[in-house]
Image 1 (cartoon, rainbow, N blue to C red):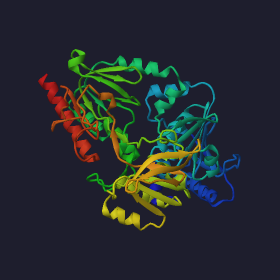
Image 2 (image 1 turned 30 degrees about the vertical axis):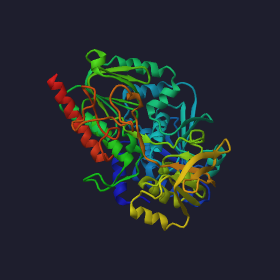
Image 3 (image 1 turned 120 degrees about the vertical axis):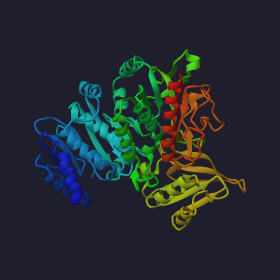
Length: 517
């Protein structure tokens, strides 16, 4: 299962294991159990510090625990960890084997200080880009604190559990048998939910920071580029990000980033974070900006207010808040979010295998989603508001060739239906005949573009009617000393490579502003 090149890579990684570990498998007679056993045996053969045994001591089969010699570690995979989760598997082996996680000392201390009993279960899919972050966070906690137990469960391998718990979006995390977290979350965000007083301490710590020369808001391609360019000028630089990598984290394949023929969103996001870490940048991850007071109104230094109550000050600000999935804003959408309404076909598509789904949106993202889902779902209905699809011709041709796809144009979705627990259908209006029709289905994937994350900037800088930040060719906003870059601005063509260039421009403009001050 592992080719020679991968085995060589793993040998180098596993050389960091300092304490012997055991892969203890619980198997049955299924093909998946055979596949898991082969994988675990091959991994164990790569290192003398890893051994494999079959114990059949857990009811979830196939599954395996990662045990540390002489210690109590509650870390298990009810999965064959491939795809995006293979990295999670490797990191779990390293951390259980004594190689320290990359987190800062404060975070590690918080994990070790957790008191009580925490039994986490995370349901994921192997195609989900958001899931590894959650799985790796909880694995790290389980590797460091014996009071934390974690089982990472492939929903596709245990469909009965998924059905019983009504899980229709991943990652879905349960704590001590009760729902704890749906969707992406960082390690810090999970710790904050477990420690009620942590937020106040963090806010106080952030507010106590000295003023910055350049403060970047956003950790996507634009924000990362801005932080790097600013730091290289030798000025005091900080970056506030809700989630490093931003929207890139939710992108599957990236094939148009010049000089890199192919990569995936999570890999690029990790590379951005590593690159920023090479410079003297104060990274404040897991923080949400809530208000901006430009320098002219704040008395000399701009003020950035955060959702946790903290306030940061800086001579200049670079806004790169990015964008998020646009919603259709119809009855039922909010009520059935994570219960059949989804926005990431790569993440949640496998949960709808053999079911009927709809895709709303006839642009490239909508048509690509419909093509992907057609390979999993029993039937896909694509609804487009316009009189024709807007996707590239080659994508439309592929879509029309699929036997289990119905295309509806001039179709305005007016309501998403459900039984209180899950989606059961949707209602749309035929804009030509004015007739109202119902489609029975189990899932709805919304793919109608992006919305800038700029609500918190109303009144601080000039926004267009589309809520984009107005900028000039030097990335100046309407507020002196405040610059902006990336998908949240008026720059045309929302592309990664363009966002990075704009981030660099914004940083150079901010430095020029500092010099002239």
